[in-house]
Image (tube, rainbow, N blue to C red; front, side):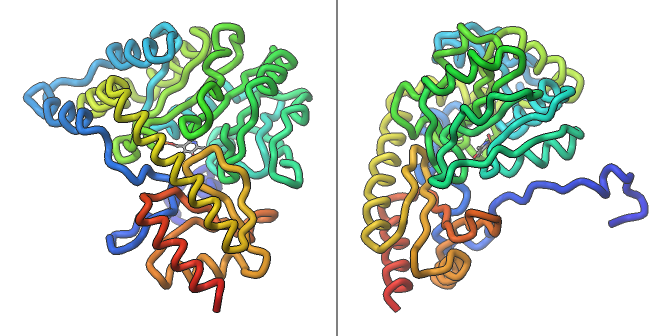
Length: 355
Ligand SMILES: *Cc1c(COP(=O)(O)O)cnc(C)c1O
C-alpha cells in the first residue's frame, strides 16, 4: 500500500505467475514451458534481425507476420490480430469485447488471469462450475451473458471439449462473443481447434500463443483469429494503447517459427508421446490423472496430500504447480518435461509415495 496509489490501484488483485527461480539446478515442471529449445531456424532469424534496422520502429501492423499466420490457418490477414503474448491479446479482448451489460461466463476452474482482467476492467462475471469429473459442459453456458471464455484444453485440468459442442454453443449464442483460449491446442488431436469454425461464426474468437507448443515463452508472442469485425475491435484497442507491441526480433522469430513446420511437428509429437508415458507411470504410482490433451497433467493421489507432495518434490529440487483453491487443492499440475526430467520426477515421487 502507498499513499500515492489511486483507489483503483489499491483495489487491484494482480495475477501471480508460477515461479521462475534464479537457481538452475532445478527440474522445472511448473509453468508449462516447452522442454525443448525453439527451432534452429528461429534462432537464426533472430540473429539476422539484430542489425541497424533496430533503430527503426517495427511495422505497426505486423503485416508479414499476419500474412504468415493467415496462410498457415487458411484465413485472411484481416482475420488475424497479434500481440505481446496471448496474455496481452486476452487483456484487449476483455477490454474491447467483454465490457458489456451482462456478466461474462467462464469455468470455476480455469485460467486464473480471467478474474484478474475482470477486476482491471470492472467486468462482472459468473463462474460456471465444471462437472464432478472436471469436464466442461457447454450446455451450462446457455444463458444470458456478456461473453463467454474458456481455455480448450482447459487449464489447469488439461481436459478437452469437442468441436461439435463448441459449434452448438456458437449456434445458441449468436449475440455475444465466444472466446476459445487455445494455448495448448497443439498438444491435442489434430482437428480439435475451433479455427475451422471461424468463417461460419462471426462471434467466435480463437486465441493462441507461441509460448507453449512453439517454445517461445521468453519472447512474448500471441495472436487471435476471428471475423474481421472482431479483429478490428481489437486493433482499435491496441492502437489506443501501444502501436508497437512486437519488435523486429519477435516478428522475425514468429515468422520463422511458422515456416519451420517440420521441427514444430516433431517437437509437438515428442511432448505428446512423453505425456502419454508420464500418465501411465503416474497411474502405476497410484495417481488419479485427468485425461490430458495439453503439455501438462493434473493428478491427485488417494493417500498423499497435494500440498505435502509439492513440498516434498521441492525438497528434491523438482518444482511443479499446486493451487491452494477449492476443489483442486489435492491436485498437482505437472508440466511434461524431457524424457530425462520426467524420469527424475517419477523417481522422486516413487521415493516419496513409498515412504
Ligand atoms: C500460458 C497461457 C496463456 C498465456 O500465454 P502467453 O502467450 O505466454 O501470454 C494464456 N492462456 C492460457 C490458458 C495459458 O495457459
